[in-house]
Length: 615
Image (cartoon, rainbow, N blue to C red):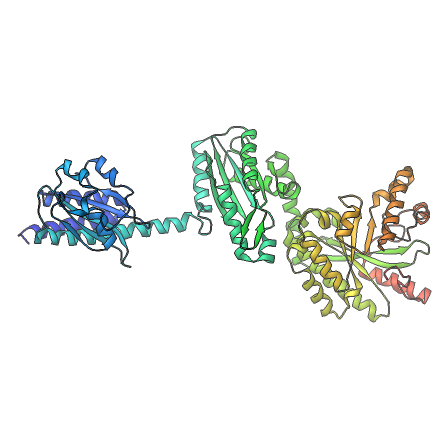
């Protein structure tokens, strides 16, 4: 190598490495390298191309080549006769073409090169450390010739520098992707969402925010497996991310997505965007032999109207989504100020119940179920109560909002199951022949998928047969959805010998068809029908119809909310034999109900619950 050239090449190498370390773009680094080498060897023209995973060529740097020439090369696929660079990328080895005009490798491309005075081209593949061809480095010559020894030394250095620069770029791109993109769906992730949301707010841009949840994903994971669940997530992500001008989709994690809708100023505009997502995600998808019918629920908030700070806007969209999942599953809810108050109250209730569970302040109270003809207690319903730190006792209605949190609801149910099983064991050991105690369960108990195991474990721990428990299920829980997981769970429980009661019958969506689809053992007529008996015959006709239907289906009936002897008389005339209400006793503690049961047992010397109601 000529004296001084080594020093100049070392200087170029250090300059390029410093540019890489400083974070300059790959394009700027490649351009700088080409210019420095062309200054070092004025008779050559440098070019750097990248090669993508599909073996397509893309110009990276060629400062002395016309833009039109570089653009003509963009996207050409590497192959055995694709000029010097395309062939070098294809073969993975250097290709020297001393005469472009006559060499067959350039047959299809010489018309591009010859008018520019390019007569020869030597291209060397740039390889990553794992052996992949990631680019090419080329010298073009204005004369027919081959490279000399100096040029070979220069190219060896340049290819090494290019490999370092490209690998550095790949690492940065990989790190960026890991930092800002979701690996399952390819959508931007929560970090990128936070950045873009804050950027929109900072710029005071016109936009709206939609938060999207996939409905019943946990049930799909539990029943069909996580592979199917992941397929559903990817499918919904693709549907949400369909090319829609002004809409940018993100996966925030789990079953939750966000969509920033740019350029809108009204709630109607945001509703249109939300409806578009609902429409796009309504198509069925197939995974192997499984056909899935996606459903999403959406909450939305508009920048400016619903918040001028990122955190407030996000929180308000969350409130809307939360409300949508409670009241409009599978639909869209736009944020309204009153939602914030109701949801804050709900959050407060959740926190209070959580603290009460941790401190042992959740307990069971018991209300008698009586035979109307004799007022004899034939069963009990366990009702949850919360004691405050000062000793006050709150009924479930005061903290019912907390049960919207499925984890809280499930924990309360588990606490109730343990106490009921423990109390039944105590009563049996005292000789009180208690037969059945009803306990309420929620949608969350069924969705968790372990209700049967939880019941069996609780009652086995206290050595209490499962025949003593009656699961009371509210209509909205039992019949409110089209999914079959509740029906299947109920069937498994009934097969184990448990009885199932349908609570608050007549207030929701119950019908004879539903009762055939979801068999139960007991119907509890809602208190509103009992109260209305005094105001006309409409309620009497309804109760009589319920009694006739129940008798034909071999279902027992309990009337709730009985407070007077007149109601007992009317219900008895309509064929109802059992009731529950303040007339027979208010809900009381386990200690008080034990004394009441003992008193009845000793007074009558008969079997508690001996009337064949539960048979």
